[in-house]
Amino acid sequence: MREGAQVAQAEAGPRYEVFHTDCPARDVVDHVTSRWGIWVLISLRSNSLRFFELRDSIRGISEKMLAQTLRALVQDGLVWREVEPTTPPQVTYGLTEFGKNISEPLTDLFDRITQHLPPRTAE
Image 1 (cartoon, rainbow, N blue to C red):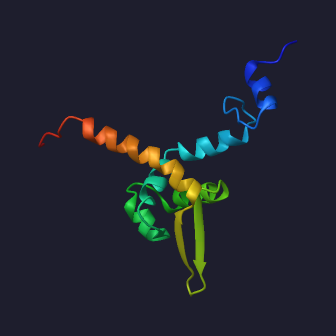
Image 2: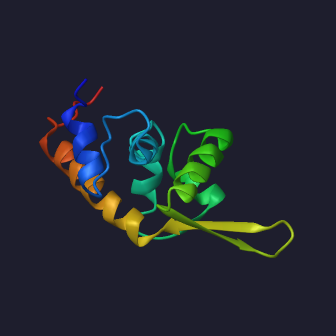
């Protein structure tokens, strides 16, 4: 039986094939495009933020979901995490170079959406 073109391409070169369920890049794509992953990356694009500043900048996110999302993005290498040894510890998050690279097109997407939406009507 002949393997699919995606499998053959994956074996031939270093590219990841995100259409395969076992592709490691697929997890990163899932984390970036998750409900909260996009908002975290967009919120961190201008500067680093402490956990509660980040939570306050993303309306509607629970602390639990923010913690889970940040954990995944840190593990993926998109976000860095710095813990200051204070009581209680202060934790700051920011974008890595990889995270900045990924958040750029997301910022462009958001800018395009907001620029092309019809004006809001007063209610």
